[in-house]
Figure 1 (spheres, chains in turn orange, green, red, purple):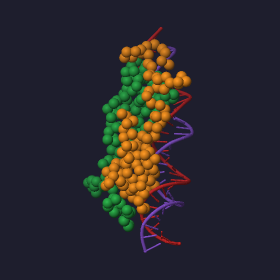
Figure 2: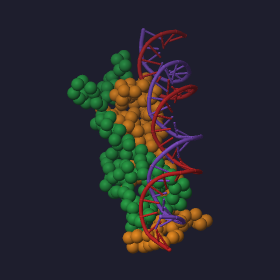
Figure 3: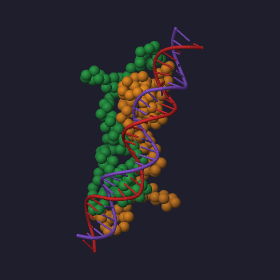
Figure 4: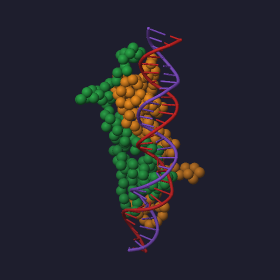
Amino acid sequence: MTTTTAPNAPSASAPSATTTTACCGITTPGGLTREQAETNATLLKAVADPVRLRLLSIIRDSEGGEACVCDLTPAVGLAQPTVSHHLKVLTEAGLIEREKRGTWAWFRVVPSRLEDVRSIFA
Amino acid sequence: MTTTTAPNAPSASAPSATTTTACCGITTPGGLTREQAETNATLLKAVADPVRLRLLSIIRDSEGGEACVCDLTPAVGLAQPTVSHHLKVLTEAGLIEREKRGTWAWFRVVPSRLEDVRSIFA
DNA sequence: CGCAAATATCGATGTTCGTCAATATCTATG
DNA sequence: CATAGATATTGACGAACATCGATATTTGCG
């Protein structure tokens, strides 16, 4: 491909991506490695869910910046195992922290991790 | 729940989320509506994919800030219909714009839309 | 120690999503 | 107008995911 006649391109003629040739002849286009893209996508997937977005919002707006499952479950209107699952996803992504006090499990948002999300699109 | 003995809470005793009671007696906890959460999640889903993140990166770093499918396809190493599909997802999310010049389809990033993504976590 | 309450884990299920091959559509060109 | 090349669409398939019921684990209390 990219080897026929000439398209009506702005300045140049034939299309050609900005490929940054690395070693071994492997071309790595764009300023983003496959691994970097995979890592960023994993973090974004943890946040690309309406329930988890609401959980983050509720926790952040709660008194003292923390909330427990017994409050979050009725707040989002889902079954307790489902809420527990979402909290686990957020925790494993580093977006919230768990602290168990007595029978209750308290969660709080990790601001620096939210900043990591924003910095992906800086 | 939330009606037994007293947990070792920081200042208060029994857990209780910051519920902002709306009209009709329906409680809307956190500063995020279900619709808002759904809208934000939809935008984030469009970006929570390693291939689409790389496409955005490649397009942005290309000459003139634009690239066509014939360059993007070999760049990400996937089949042409797959790349076309991802570009459609990004386009429908408003993250990129399509312009057809001749046989080629050129794509460029919409910066304001990227800013929308960042503002979700402001 | 045994019971009750809060949370986590497991297994199953329906849905969404990424991928590709085949095909259709569109555009320039001869 | 027929042909070739670039891109979009369709249909199918497997993987990943959200959800729930049932159950296990943990903790406080009598």
